[in-house]
Length: 111
Length: 290
Image (tube, rainbow over all chains, first blue to last red):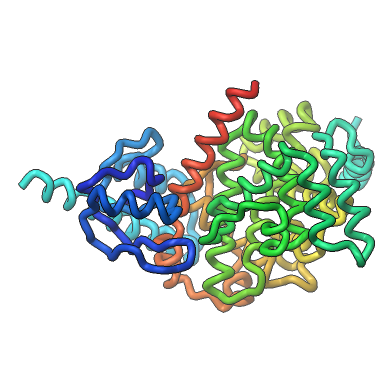
């Protein structure tokens, strides 16, 4: 998943969540492959950001799952509080799902 | 010379009161305060005053439109921003834009941490149906104001404090030892001088010690939790990398079940992308004006 400014959006990218305009109207559903027409319409209606599937654009601040998990360990080093460890667990789950989703997209692209 | 903590805090407060070495607030804040004192002042009069300053106007609109407030519609005029966000938030935005300009030149990661906490606090407030989520976002934005002041106005002492932290002291204790008060107290103290609302002052002042909250326990607990979640996610950085300790009472006060955390991270993640692009844009602009 990546949330990108409209200027980064290219035809062929797939929406990860609904695209909603300023008035709360749904312009486009989830999992839709975007076309030139979609993008033009978003521009006209003042949409600024779109969330797309996978990692279509390399962003300098994005890390790999391994790095994310290693840094997570580092931030929780020595922590024994159960509540904090539960937060850590949900973060791990969240991160793994986020990266798994991107990997699946990569595999789909190859075939 | 070894002053006790009380003496130290008196000296620091005196310096803060005189605003010595502090980033100067734009004179417009003073004029705005005077205008607000008069109950008959209308939004359009306030907007008129602010709009005279083109630079501040564009900064306010930029912050008002960023992901930490999360308005779907573009806010294009000061009057519009005043109606949607209220006078107090606009005041904070003017203060923020002048103070943070210094901080993101010096320490982008503290800026990122602050806007991350603001966004997370707003998401939590919306989910837990706590009133005026945008005001709570603003408390999140300012929660580490004291750290900025330490860094900018007390450079020598700040170095000493960093050394204590490296020796293994917790940053809150190190701050108390060096300044006589910690960053939460320092931020709240300054916010009082600036006439900001009590709801914001208390939430900032109690974000590490919830028992200090009297009238705004929920708000304080919310900033406490948002701070921990952003530390846990690893967005930006404050002085320390380690996740700060969680006060169990925060969960009770908010009636928040930790099983809901994953959902919060899911809502938060796309917003963090927006914040990242927002910060990159700011960085570019600063390079141009430097």
